[in-house]
Length: 197
Image (tube, rainbow, N blue to C red; front, side, top):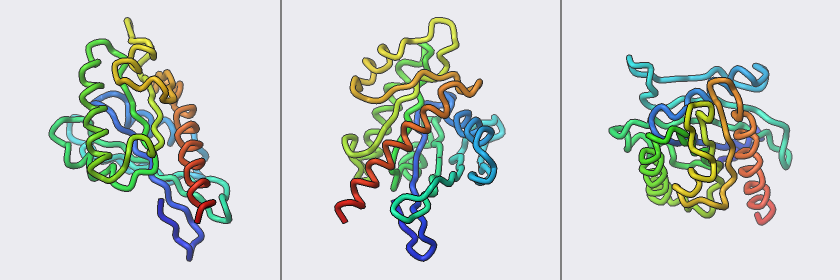
């Protein structure tokens, strides 16, 4: 969270995390399509020749005022490929909330678990705790044959209490529900923090 008192802006950062090709960029693309252009920036996307996210995708949203400040929510994704671990750690720095996008294909179960542990270690390295950082789980690709149930993915990641949404991000299903949930969670935390200042 960063407050620009001169502009009366509250800058919040939400990072979409998960294994390669789980649907992180697709989420941001769907949000970009569905949000009024008056309340969003253009989407910045850095991709490789294979059309994969190289560094990050970025999209900024504006919302109504909180405590006299205009919230500007910055949405980022991380590259899922193993070789970009350093970039993932960097993008997570200063995150106010995280959406973990799991791939519901049974064959991707191990990759989901590795990515989850990767995220936890990068949060800790950035002095962010799993308990204090708002996190929402999105189980994407629920439309594929044999998709893992939400309960199975939560059990795999050992996150029984976490808020979880099914999604078919390519069709936009579950995308805005996920965004609303993480935004609400981040805002609740911010209001608690500002109340104690």
